[in-house]
Picture 1 (cartoon, one colour):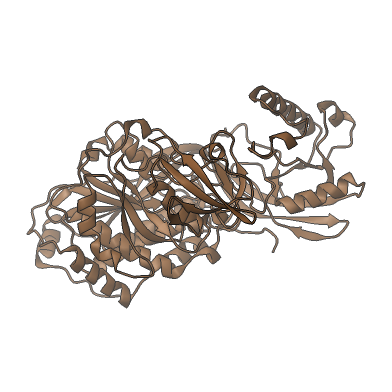
Picture 2 (tube, helix red, strand yellow; picture 1 turned 180 degrees about the horizontal axis):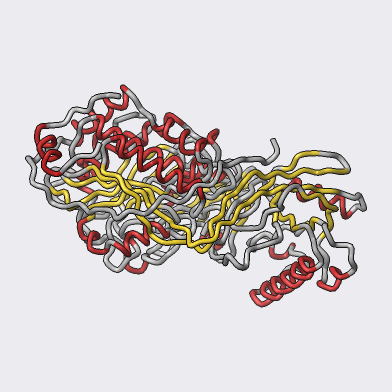
Length: 612
């Protein structure tokens, strides 16, 4: 154990106050009761000898020196994701991970607590799951299923059958024990595909509602007939995980709904249609725990020396969906938050304002943890200078948005970050209309209240495809980019210190465009392919649709900014004016489109289909 060095004023303060020392198969550990919520003491003014604040360049130099000696960000990520696995809100795994992160913060020398923000009626723990083709040719299947949905109670094999056309067809006695293949949903409306739609496909809202009612009637009849379960697909390679926690202990789901990749689903369906008998087997182990189940945030304070009742919040969300390990969403943000805290302590840096490290849960279900914290602590909101949220995956932190009033401040204090690593530059991005709103992470909770608080979602860049891992089966440790993570932890620590050491809290004038507070943000309205730039689908009525974006186009530039991946596209869209040009490769030619967003909308492009 390494002896900690305390300044004399800290020792005297402690004496006065008191000090207490290839198939889809995963497995999570045994159940554990959720960590008991504790009342979190708020920062209070403590008489102490003020520490002289360091300049941004000196603070960065000391953080970099500490990081050269040791950078544990990848170790934090590995332990979080491999020791606890996925961290679904309300799960045993999340309760364990929350207590583990609290202990990590405390071990760094911070005041760390767990605080409840609310409850769920039912807890859900996912066990191992797998799928396979039994016959005609045995083969494993990559599969998944939503959280808070039914399991199988052991391996269940049965004949695969295509979804019937009518509810009446389910009454012939042949469906008991069958796995029913549910067709992929039709592609969202496309500008260039309207004429090619099948006649049976709904063409209006009324038609869509009627088709949905008919599908529900058919599936209800099949459930009553005793089917083993349903087998669905999104049509592509990705299997997204979602789920609804608002189920009742006395009315739990009973019929499994398994998901397959598009190619596997199509192969099986084609065989059945050709008259080839297919037998499938799925095993999905789940545990439901009657609630109320406590849901918590993890909070840790590095106390300020001069303004301890004011704070800069640094964090991300600790919860994840449970279809994989939750590495990039958002284990990476948890790891950088932990390491930023450790680096600041290891460098012996004492901020003027308290730096509060926060790991929220319930983000995936609607920013519940951050919103719950705001509801409980409205008195603290005027004392928050900034909320810095890392939730964009393993790409490196490359910049920050700045209002007109903030831009000169940020240009000065973040100047040392611009040259920290030429391969990973950092830029202040002016947003004269206000900070981006509607991105869908916890900083939005602070921007969308009546008197908004400065909330920031870090710009990120680098050669990674976040869309491939976001909420999918690929969100595993293989997705981590350690060099990006190490860099981001240093940047976040240095930025937090620089903001905390300002003479005054950040200005709030022009913080948010009032018409943007409840917006969904700036989107092109398209589904990207695996490279993040090739258009797989276009949303009718969206900005891309109106501009003439087509399926198969590959986006090359936004305005005059070249983009090579989805992260760069997000940043370019956010920085572009509301009216700009979109350059795309369309077959052998290059097309230039005129795109326009509503002036208030500023954000990243559409997330994966399962997102909120």
